[in-house]
Length: 134
Image (cartoon, rainbow, N blue to C red; front, top):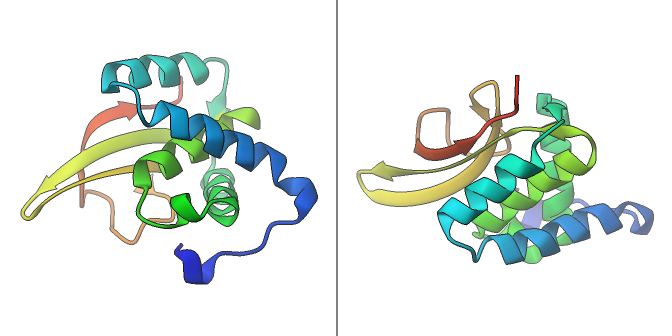
């Protein structure tokens, strides 16, 4: 979802996505090992997110943040995962690369399918993933 296709979110539904976006902005600046530890701690006690739950969280994050609606995939993916967690669920959070041409990306997925991404599953090779506890 890009800036052109963002849906407006009613004022009463904005606080949780805004808090997730703010927390994600801070977490996007920490070292990968620290980020992984924080996300692994955060997911504790959460059920696995469904595709609809993860998609709704991603859409709401994009709706409240122009930065997340743009090319800031790391902040968007962290915020989406955190928003899911606030609601008692956890998607698989991933960051990875593709090699030809080189590109890095971060996303959330459910059952191996990226949520809200223009690329199919397997387009990026995950290097770091925080899955829900099964």
